[in-house]
Image (cartoon, rainbow, N blue to C red):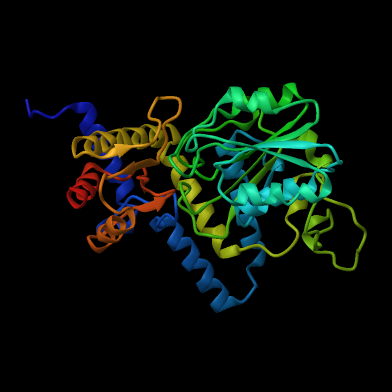
Length: 385
């Protein structure tokens, strides 16, 4: 007997295999994936290859680059349980929020429901509708712990939309989009989901859950670069959402610049008005293929295991965990306080010791990914204690 738990050893081996693909792990205990993640080797290589191609060959390989856009669309569709025609390649979550906010044919007297704890991008676009006679019903919440009953109570026959984050950026509260979709649909409303804090870390099936529209960019849990993301729209709602930012790439005859007829693409590609962020797309597509090969269920399991271990360690040194860690609400984000100590000073001290965490809402926030290991957690605990 070697004294090792076979299950723990197997998890450790899997983590180490993923860790070998993350160059940042050689120096950093990087526990800040809820902000901006480091790139895996596969993504960095794909982006360098594109830069080299552009430098050496100009745009002679443009058709090859365009093929990569379609590969990203297919990968995103697989991640979401969607059809690739329901996916638009966008720059960031904010762009996706704007497509919905500005695309719905709002009428005076309509209302929408959104929790007060949302990231600003998922509030500003909705508040901006007030001057059109749209009532923006902002739900008061405790931290980012959103209640289904409160959402239900805020909806009525004039509700056109419920907008929520799948996982809250403050404490990582994970809500069930399927339950919220049922509430919204009972009132004839759409459900829009900001999925940036969960996509790449947890499984999500937009069809099974009844999600109507969703946006997420790739620089957090999908381990992609900034400036590349995905937008999902249910096919029955495609013609209900007026496209914004129309351009040469919005039409069926994209590339035929002599034809100026406005004949929109019959799928989500109509929202891709102009030139793509090809470098970002190369990186995100490579990351999604890599994550798919690792297995999203395995990634979820590892993230919940390492965050559970982190919470135990924090509690042992007197930390106060604010995140809801019940199985249905826990995520990759752990929000906590160290009583009597300044969160920002602790964050800076951690950075000086090559440990990366962040501050949100007056609390420290740690967000390990599946390649993070117990040594990373121990390094954080050593600094905090």
